Image 1 (tube, rainbow, N blue to C red):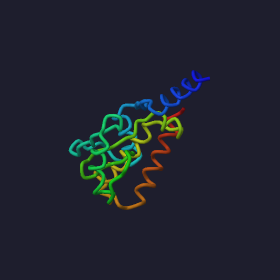
Image 2: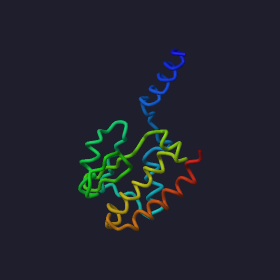
Image 3: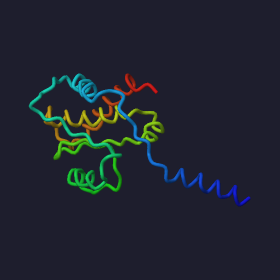
Image 4: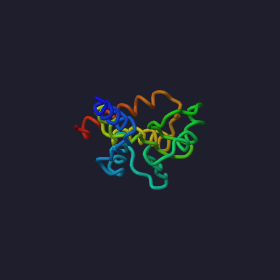
Length: 150
């Protein structure tokens, strides 16, 4: 009986402390960006620097917090998908279980943040306009339906 309890406890604790398995992009960033530009009726402008992309598994939480705090007016407790306008950086969750549970792929999250980048850098829209979120969600959903078949 003690052995059985020990085996159960070890199994449970290994689940609790198991490392997250990073998700990977299915498509190259250039392809994702081209799809966003297409949806926004824009052409690539090489004079506008592309945002640097940071994945959760390789990025300290503090870096994400520092990058997004001023924009959001608060310091987030957890890492999430976001475009940090001031630093021209994109932060992406890459925990494969998150995408499996949500029935999504990481690519559509990156597409969403690339839409925000194009909205601000190409179209000069105000990042604080709430309608930008709906625009990004619509393009993300269209991309997911076409390219993220699970």
